[in-house]
Length: 282
Image (cartoon, rainbow, N blue to C red; front, top):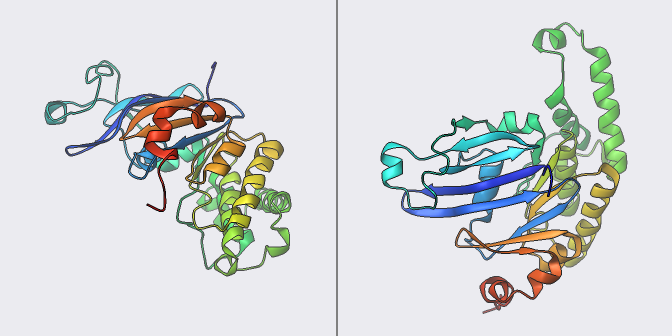
């Protein structure tokens, strides 16, 4: 794959004596929908937290559009206690630590398993706040009302986005009053308002009933079609994953055990043993 939007290179995340993600490498190409799956405790959310800058990796580098934004290697006591792979691989590279807000400005937007809307604000206000991520006018311009044209543009674009995602009629509704499925749609719309190069969805179908999950599956497909979005997601609902993913990575105990198109993953015995073959009622 040439020029991936997102690249993880031998990423390890260690907490004390626990290696939550071990030597993980993966890529997400332009316009792809790529899923990361695995059993509970496999390290999926930890991997997402590294990608979005919540955690700096213990070892490894991450790239957005070919530009490194996180790069670490263990030194001193951390090197002595390191339990992951390739301890020396990145020793010659400079440390690089972008913060989550800097990473968002670079073009990476995220939703969360537990919806994190501004519950007391309206649907429109939630999206408009995200639009301000790339506002050019500063504090003084806002104080003295010198950014009127920019504010008008952002309000217009926020409304256009709500039209596209089917929430325009609810623009004045308080976010916390929306049904769960519409709250999830709003959270995704708010992420899209930052004009991301990569949209990261952390278990978007969590807590949804079958009908809501089906509607979400269609909605994610529409997002790619209408916005040309590149999407990276964690999800436990296998029907959703298999229906919309171009490629799937599978991890178990923090390590990659399989990668491929949905048909390959469904028939991979290692995946069946680790995840897909587990009786969820057992």
